[in-house]
Image (spheres, rainbow, N blue to C red):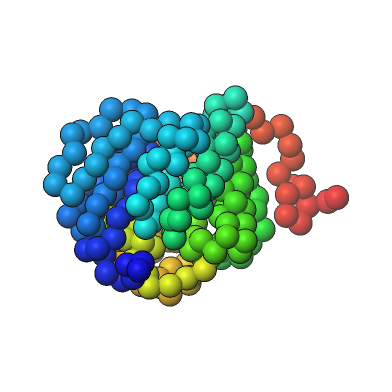
Length: 281
């Protein structure tokens, strides 16, 4: 009999990409919360503590990923190239590795996948527009394209294979746990809130497919995060507390300042911003 998701002390949870910044944060905050926290990455990790398992797993290796899924109730899928990069790097990790994760979960009878998407999946929407989770994909780079792909795979595996899937369009998560530039006053998510959001996605008693923004309770937030309320996500932190610290940060690139995706938008940009959203055909 499957353990109900709202009984966390009996759940077995896998985190891919556990050696990354978000992975280490979730490991620290979720330690002891579940019956098992299995932590996989190709990078070195700290030794396993009580209730933990640590394994070297490359998400490009389907057989290895499938072995890592054995006995797991929920996967938090973080493993990926975490920023804009060449297609040669994005393709095997963020595209093929993402597919491998969902397919291995299906094969092993995993019931839920929490996918680390990104605000860069919708980065070319204009910042002046307050957007929700139903807006059309507007990726601002190859990294954003890979997150659109991951959300689409999640939708497929929810509808066709009955996985419960949550896609987290994560804003600005910083290793320092504080904003470092003016845009972060809109998009920042604290370590505490990131762990809270992840735990609510793991432990909510039942959902089919949901997309939410990974953002703290920021005064200047421009994202309608209504679905997160359904999950029970109640962010506690506000980037405005750091407004004075970032007041003297360098001014934002004029193209970046027009769009939700910020600095990813002007990268390699040779277009005409007046033709985006309402400009001439």
